[in-house]
Image 1 (cartoon, rainbow, N blue to C red):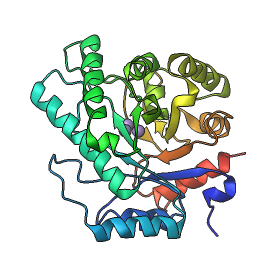
Image 2 (cartoon, protein in one colour):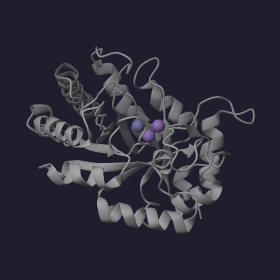
Image 3 (cartoon, rainbow, N blue to C red):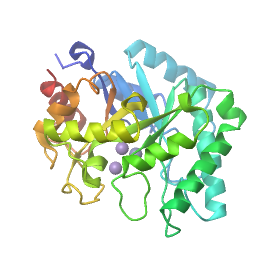
Length: 294
Ligand code: ZN
Ligand code: MN
Ligand code: MN
């Protein structure tokens, strides 16, 4: 018998590979008895995308239903920079985001999670303005208006010129957008910790969530990326560790997965995939999370 998140009252899964077809991701999730899943909707190292086949879409939906993978989210391509000062990259990024919405809609996936971009030297204000302008344009497209796909903005570790390491920046962006019910936030625990927020103790988490509530609003929090951090708090290093084996540690994750404001949310692991303790690392990390659940 393996532990199953549903028995723990959790919505829990991991980012899974789509190698061999989008629907293969659901087979992999089902093998590990996840009830939640995150995927890329295409090869994210390339701007060009292969059209999804009807068969692939049908299989993806059918398998999700059969295996009880209740929650799914698309992670957008890392190539997107919606805050770029360069017009060509900015245009491509808007198109890329629209394509992610279109594909999520086709797959029956209710949300896409995206990094909000980097100002690459043009300055924070400039970057935020570009991002808001990009999202407003996306809001006017048929793909956005003709679907209910939600856009989740992910916090970052704040490496280089990346936006979104400060919750206040996320709040500021969300306040400027029109279709507020179509946006939400994803907190990545590794990114937040590396950005300087404390996730390593119950008291630290409480303070962190108070800040988030003030800057963004806990009602706008839709998803948690559950990753431990190799880098110290405030290091701005985006390096994910296995659950409980980084600087956040078991105490921090116990606080996160049992917190009354967080415990009902979907938790997605983006932890390293190498073998761990002679098992699949995802298996070990999923078990760790369920062990910490009260
Ligand atoms: Zn991400
Ligand atoms: Mn993440
Ligand atoms: Mn990361």
